[in-house]
Image (cartoon, rainbow over the protein chains, first blue to last red):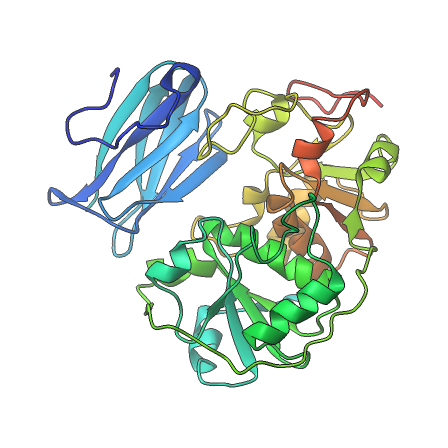
Length: 99
Length: 282
């Protein structure tokens, strides 16, 4: 869970020691999905942030310590929810396969 | 104001793509999004360079705004339709900004860029130029803009609606979570402000909830619509979204957006700050 996995989003310029990073990639049949929307919901299910995925299907959040839910929306796919734990000083890497 | 006057659907926009008196304008937090693809015929406004003074923290002045819209080819009698990413945060901010400078006919595309993309509607990277106009902005309508002293005076008196996420309101986060958290200002909220996250007003696809649902949400949160309201967030863009809901969709009489918002308030010396999930005392 610490550090970017091979092929993950570069952490250049991010002060990982001070941030609780949640990042990863949205995929469909193993290929990256560009232009999906990943929203970060807090432990009560309330919206906290949302980003569109990059050309390589990547996304990143700077959260706080605790449990979060990633909700992914994409054209022609049902929303996918995935729980993730974040902690300051760590990088939580998440792959989100969508239908 | 009503939903019919202030909001248009993606379908409406598609039907007006070739209407010369309808000007589509994309405004995004990510100012490069437009360049990668935009709705056909849409021009771009960059909220960081076009809409902000480049030295002081303030908006461009009336003459600068007039010159900007003249150069971009927007006329006073054009119907301006704004849209953008982030569930229209910055498009709503631009909507409020156009109202601030007295533009008559301005609308938001319901759902913004996200809804357009999720519907798999067409985007293009074709360059767009419009013939220059002679645009004349009005003096700022300060009945919709709140400043810091007025916000401090509103504690315990007016409705203060803090539309940030619950964790930002409570002081557990300092910025929306797609941005790094290290920030200069103190964490927390203006005492007596209620927390109604902007996102309560939107569906997952970025469209606004129905008027009935919206009335229910703000009523249940304790917003007294007989009182004046000041909306705030971190830099005034998400609160523009809620300003739009309260003023334009629900027709509340007096609603102001505090564009200084938490990055200003949380840096002021000596003002009261509340932390935690409760509004706190005046």
